[in-house]
Length: 236
Ligand code: 5RP
Image (cartoon, rainbow, N blue to C red):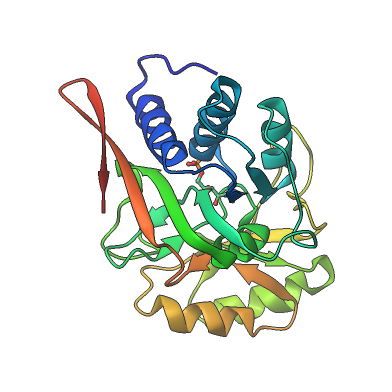
């Protein structure tokens, strides 16, 4: 994986590198999903190869994360085999000034929330385009739903003021199916005034597995930026 001069790719690469540099030997590491975390996984693999990092174990948040981790030589474990996660690295679709997030652009938010919430340190890796004043303004909220409950959950989300749309596959007819065998409704809200309340209300609808609001979970947000053609990383 190499980053060409595409500035967004460059920002993702550098922020992924910065997050991977924070991981210490013997750590249990939550491995997020998405194109930014993919760079972090790549750099973790490179540190393992050079011997700069030793004896880490990864907890993948998706099938895709486990494929990438294996490709880069990161040993994997499961939540049944460990009793803590030291650090998790994961991307986001939106980040607000309070470090609350919308996640689920890759339909992996259910497992991501389990792993990221367990981590003592949860580092979010984003490029600067993900920063918003208010959640919900640029990205719809992903909600994972049991297939048999799609109709009533859709109605309940409309009653909450949202506009839900069933996420459809690309290069596959029909809906996206998550790693758990469920479907995803992408729900457009004009803006989300109280993310903590909405997270709970949506998760309380029967048939909803999890939604993509991550409130009070992130401990640090690393932001990749390009200034004068040079990629830099700053902390929110
Ligand atoms: C997957 C996610 C991703 O972390 C999020 O969509 C950001 O992805 P990317 O780094 O490719 O922009 O939540 O479910």
